[in-house]
Image 1 (cartoon, rainbow, N blue to C red):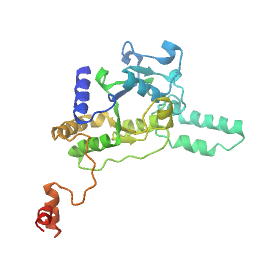
Image 2 (image 1 turned 45 degrees about the vertical axis):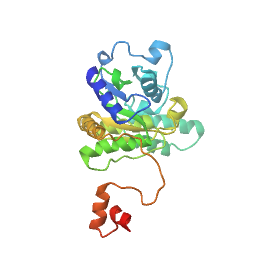
Image 3 (image 1 turned 60 degrees about the horizontal axis):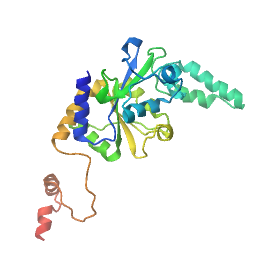
Image 4 (image 1 turned 135 degrees about the vertical axis):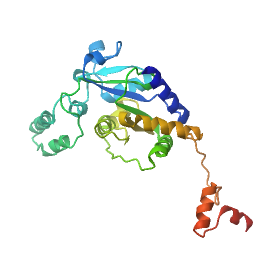
Length: 267
């Protein structure tokens, strides 16, 4: 599997020059699935981290990170990754309401609306840079700039010829970048949340593109096809009237009775 993942990262590198490798994630049911040498924050150092920091350790430092419930230092994944069920999650917000003398209704609705894995289905989560991951990812996350996302979507479009749909939240990106992709098997675009920026050192111009396992073959076929065109993420900006256009533009304009580039040049 390692060689396959290295080939996949090499394909991505041909298409876009990401700051860091893609991040491979795997949900773990049994401890025997965890690679030897994987870093456990609490077990190995007596410290806790947020899940977004695990993603950052993987892509920025090349670490293979494994987290169970006791390793997490941010509340949202405790619910959405199925370490507890939603009812216990709601009870947490009832406790907050009792402490502050407020209503828990909005907090309970907040919890109910989360996409979440089935409580108790998984023991933990494994994260590694794609080119060092000796396992089949459940999802692969590409932290990319907006211009790189455009080219990645071009690669997807070579296979789907359809719009890529997503939905957006300003918070909880560790959930929204991963859980819907696992549950629905669809690509996902996610805005890194404030925790990603403040605690996981994610640049302000990064955005997350997630590839679920179910779409891997399609995705990498598209990446290979798009890379073969030589269309990378660099486009040159210029403000010029009557700019040069591909021939298809002239064919369309002639069909629609509009002036083409050739005719304009002869005027």
